[in-house]
Length: 317
Image (cartoon, rainbow, N blue to C red; front, side, top):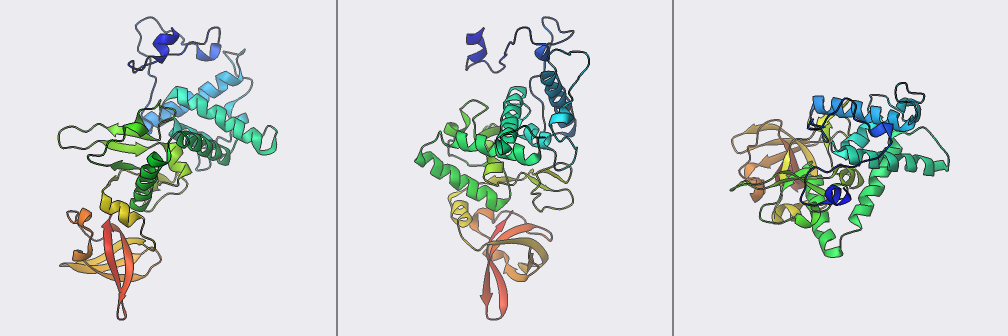
């Protein structure tokens, strides 16, 4: 059984815990389909996985009370259904995998206890601390050369406001071939033909490195709370190139929106409400094919031509 559970060539793996009510599959017979993962990026998938997570917490808290709970999940976790909900963060980091969810619940409870060396109600900050510690341990498994490339990818994605990316013709197997619990990068969609593979940073690693994962519900600005209550998952994907790596490391770049455009020039309003004139010829080579329209989010280097504020080295996000 253990060889079957750990076999690398078998995608679906199982774990058996004898005599544990918390893992009992009621009314399940041989041949029945059991869902081991959920698509937490969809509203329905997230809601279903959240219900299972809270039920699993309750089962583990009440191992001898299968039919009626004596201790509720909300007694241990600050379950609010708001942006300060710690369970939401654990679900995001689990990527819909129940086994990883249980591991992260344990790490979060340990982080909460370690804060004051006593039992406390688990808050969002405890979940965040657990995710960061987990990501840092996973990162420590790589050598300096691997970390250099990894940090370059992080810098570009932070600059482009994305946690999904494509890096054509560059193999990233060393970051994706570990077990699901320790991958820093996950494959979202395998490439085929001329279509490159789409990757995404692991949520725990995104939290640790402050890589954006959510935007505000009513705008393209980053949602720093990383909550579906206030925001939405980012759908944009950054296409990484050597040029983007160079620009991502350039200090002093700002972000803003295209406010006005006529012909091949217009004005950008920065996030601090400064107005900059720009010409489409100043868009970097990697983004030349992208459409520049009113409302488009851009990243640029502020400059001056006499008294006129100029935006140059423009990246179209």
